Each structure stands twice: as structure tokens, then as C-alpha cells.
Length: 257
Image (tube, rainbow, N blue to C red; front, top):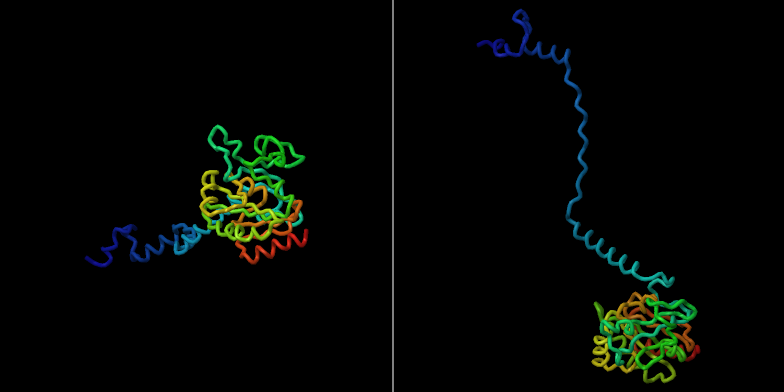
């Protein structure tokens, strides 16, 4: 078979003496194929080398968002009560008191946060906190009649009890100063066990639902508030303090007062 016969099936009549290649060239010229749209370049996909890092950062951000949005807007952020503000009123159950905290009497185990001059209600307390005076409660209105060192701690996910140990060791040297602790996140029985195990003699208030922490704008464990007699805040310390630092700041209350 000749070369010309091999391409005879490509069409054309028998009288056409052009080669197959010439006929194909003619066909392309008469009936050109439509231009194909250019193919979009593929967007390179990010590798997953650092995907786990991004995931962790996102989770941390969500956690911080949840914590900060859960706090009421007191204007103090998470730095504790600002300088020269009088510490807010509260009355909370005493850890070593005789108040029971079952389902039927849960209301009496919540901190009373109703401020003077405010409308009291079921959420904040049925009457102003300063009027809740009992051997079974820690009432800051009574404590602030003298210079006050007020420490906020929690035992959940933190090791803050040693700060209260240090306060306990120095408080005997300052009879003119009141010392107290607010422990959040635990029920009364749990706090009582901690208090007795560690030998704390100062009054320890139970803030099971964290509302006193919110009222004071406390977001770091431990946080220590130093207030003059009358309750005006001299300073708020975030984080641990040494015994020497505690003594210096407590002496400043007496000197300033």
C-alpha cells in the first residue's frame, strides 16, 4: 500500500490530487476549532505543617473571649477595683460557718452583692449586702471599718493557696488591719476543708459562682486588694507577693490612713 492510500480515509474526493497533509491544512483553515478558554491557575493550597499550631491559637482565643465576655462590664476590666474607689459591698458565706448549702437552701449560700442605693432583687440579694451581718457570713462592710487586705484565690486550675499562707503568716503582726480571703469556684464544704487543712485563721468567704470575682473585676489568681480604713483602695496587686512585699504594702495602709 502506498503512502497516499494510508490517508485515503481522511476524506476528499478521488479527483483531489492534494496530499492528506494539504487537505488537513485546508480543513483547519476553513473550519478552525474554537479557541479554548485559558485554564485558571490553581491556587496553591496551604500545607498542614503548622495547622495544629493555628488550631491551638484559635482555641486559646476562644477561651479568652469566653472568659472576658462572661464578666459583667464593671469598667475595671480584669485589674481589680481601681485606686481610690471604695471596695464594693458584698456579704458571702463564711467557709467555717454552719450554713448548709443543699438544694432547698442554695440561696443563702450565694454571695449578696446588692449595693447601697441600688434596687435589690433575687439575683443580687434581697436586701443591701451591708445589712447582712451574721457570724455565718463575711461582710466586707464590717471589714473595711479598719484597713483591709483582701485576697482573691481559686483552687480550680491554679496553685494560689500559698499566697494565702503568706498572708496568714504576717497578719498576726498587724492587729490594726483586717485580713480576709475570697475563694471562688468551690462549694462551701470544699473551701472549709482547704481552710482547716492549711490552718487559715482569717475569715474566708465562699464565692461558688464567681460573682464576687466579677463584681471586683478579678481575673487573675491570686489578686490582693489593699484598702484604707473606710474601704478606699490604695492598690491592687496581681499575682504572687512575698511576705516582705505584703508587709510593706500593709504598713503603707497604716501610714496612709
